[in-house]
Image 1 (cartoon, rainbow, N blue to C red):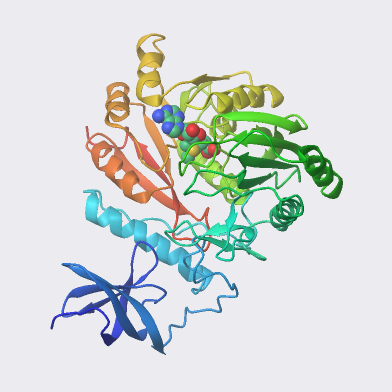
Image 2 (image 1 turned 135 degrees about the horizontal axis):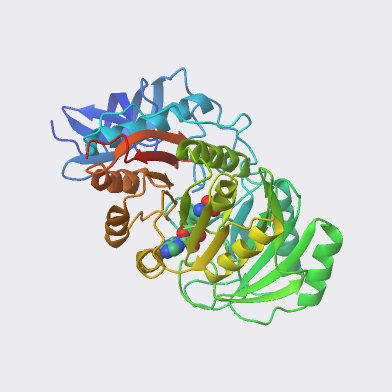
Length: 456
Ligand SMILES: C[S@@+](CC[C@H](N)C(=O)[O-])C[C@H]1O[C@@H](n2cnc3c(N)ncnc32)[C@H](O)[C@@H]1O
């Protein structure tokens, strides 16, 4: 039977895919059904047909899954933020585990049961960073919100359940100011206008707030009034920064920052440590889960206090600083200079004397550390961006063969791709998904590789 666009079918959902979507089969032809859950019977409409699969939408849920729940968010259907709001939270954790398991089964020779996903007790308002695009709606009225799924159309947000209330309140205040002062908002097509993004970072433990205006040009009409009004209304604002981004790009932040109020940074606490966070520095967005992730990573590394530890892709030095208590010496490498400034300052604030942080691209800086300074790591923490490790870094790791590698990743696909190469030398002992991004399709993993346990 040939599957045709615009035709209706009644199907059983046999699985959930990598993006949490339902999967149905018609004569072995795969149909991805957004919003459907494994075990459901649904009436679908085919939207697009490719050579070996098709996409469909639900017309009617004939037999709902027991795991279906109330979405309780008006923007959910169009918003690009959450993907799994129609599924009970515990089931989303299982779906994420299964997703990682299926990648492991497909890619690795190692047979391993992926551990259960570590979830949140209260999986709401967990994000410590909001990045709201600012633009015009169809009527030409300035709005802030989130980009609709796979587009640059802005959907206004109200009472987002994964963001903090203060981020939304601050963004609303700025939007009102933009309207009252006739400040132009950015238009991607013409590359004209002023306000592009409003970013709010919140120290969840300290309640300190940073506000970043991402603008296309330096001059903001009545900037002083905007800053003083914000500071007066929101007493937790510790700093306000203006970031200039005049490039026609999807990258949110430009290179130039002007501090408009405060010191240009906020502080937050993770575990027993204080961390300084700057506008350009990466800081994990879910601090409750980050503590669990770091504690797990440190525990799995089985440090004894005698080890040289490398913290590669170290950001503001968080993992290295957590590990420093149990290691002889920590060396962190990170490409963003401001993050390394923060990391050095963080080591100081926390009285850590056995951690050294350096700016560099891991692809080159790792070898330099090994060859020039002759430092051989016993344990390596890896926490690369979504694209995973480059071949040179893998080659350099295999050259020095640290006895343990703890590989943290926010992209299971590149994680297993890299583990596939490493498993020729290392035993993959453990993979644990951690739910850093509840209700979204994303999942963080902590994997542990051991040389001692491998058959070399
Ligand atoms: C997923 S974050 C992890 C940061 C930190 N480990 C943490 O937990 O907060 C990845 C970090 O790698 C940095 N990065 C990206 N590419 C890099 C490279 N080639 N060399 C060094 N650092 C890099 C990013 O700036 C970012 O801070």
